Length: 78
Image 1 (cartoon, helix red, strand yellow):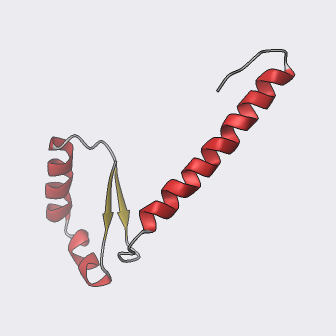
Image 2 (cartoon, one colour; image 1 turned 135 degrees about the vertical axis):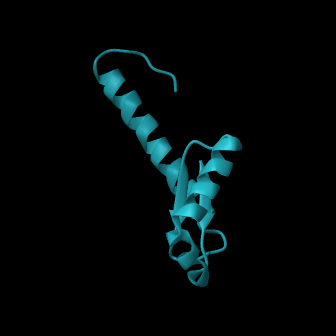
Image 3 (cartoon, helix red, strand yellow; image 1 turned 180 degrees about the horizontal axis):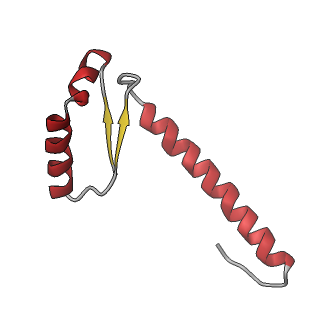
């Protein structure tokens, strides 16, 4: 997944469909299947917040899976 963070003064160029098509084509060529476009402006370190949150959710999800499977008598090692 590619993540594009725009400065507020750069947002207008992304309303040009030719620009969007060129960006999409190049990202596909580079192997990206999905693209997120952050339109609120660049925020240094913002990706770290998302990674940290995803890790916390992943740990909770693993605990829930283990508890659910254990409750039906299955031994689980995650």
